[in-house]
Picture 1 (cartoon, helix red, strand yellow):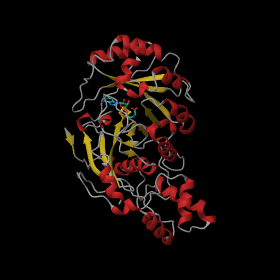
Picture 2 (tube, helix red, strand yellow):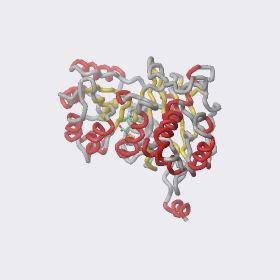
Picture 3 (cartoon, helix red, strand yellow):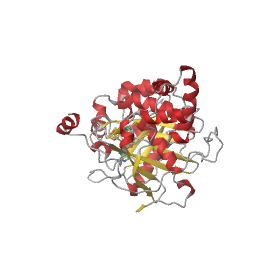
Picture 4 (cartoon, helix red, strand yellow):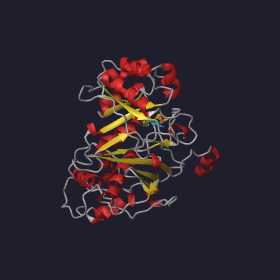
Length: 409
Ligand code: SAH
Ligand code: SF4
């Protein structure tokens, strides 16, 4: 069952008018102007110089903009009360700070929310749509963010894997998902809060971010890195890197750089303990087999008992859920500070896989647990609105060659 908006709930204080509107219009203005969202401080400084802000003022103006965008959640230059009117107008003429358009919002009976966000066309491309999911839990709220439109990989149990890659998301579009979700949930200080107020990280509705939406984040490394640097900046959105988790299917060459350059928590989509099976379930395994993947995990910068790697393991009936698999899993991970997330398979139309029986999942979990690993069984969230792991997909398709040529001419 799918609920529409519950406007009575305090968590839903709408910052934009409520709407569930399949096929809304795109704002053409936003499509033409480059976005200031997701830029580094240097990038923001360059943008300010380009609208003739004197060199001496650039640092101060950068700090002001950063505060308005990431602490106050400003969606309009007009809100930036301590920025001179004339500068606001110049910025507005050259740059955008719009969030993605909310094309559709669905709320599950368990409180999970899924948004279909639309980003304006870039260059000769079309507008693209992606999904972002918010999962409220006791004491925390996790936002599941997308890194690509579609995915180049074709993991056989994943719905996103059936959608071809359309394009990588830009830093503005990755950070834009976080800002849009926080606005929509009422997670920025309201207008009555004195200027300068920082929202404490305790009690925030979006307290954690997981790069587990559509796409393979390590195939969009630079943009994801820049976006996460903005999200974890202590003077802005201010999410601790310990509350940001990046999940990869196993792009081994980028794993050391993820630790060194991003410093966020790592999750590995393991799903199989033998190369022959992993080759089928997670085909990138043919390129980077288990031995290489686990060696990269063992060497992950910053790894310790306090900073463990999460191994995700989807429970597929009769495929990877035997106790022999559980034993091999324990053997493989020996010596790696790890937590094992058992994910009951979330079905989608057309899939041939089934979720393991609950008893079997529990037996598997017990075995792993007795070997000393935390092995929580992830409660499926938002299945009724197709928001659970691996169920995300959007209708965005890559342009055909003839369309690209026509658009470019
Ligand atoms: N591309 C990245 C991140 C996105 S997928 C990755 O593969 O890690 C997020 C998690 O959901 C991954 O662990 C993925 O393997 C898992 N997943 C995909 N399809 C699923 C499904 N149908 N049921 C349960 N988990 C699924
Ligand atoms: Fe892509 Fe991850 Fe899905 Fe595999 S599981 S197809 S890498 S999104």
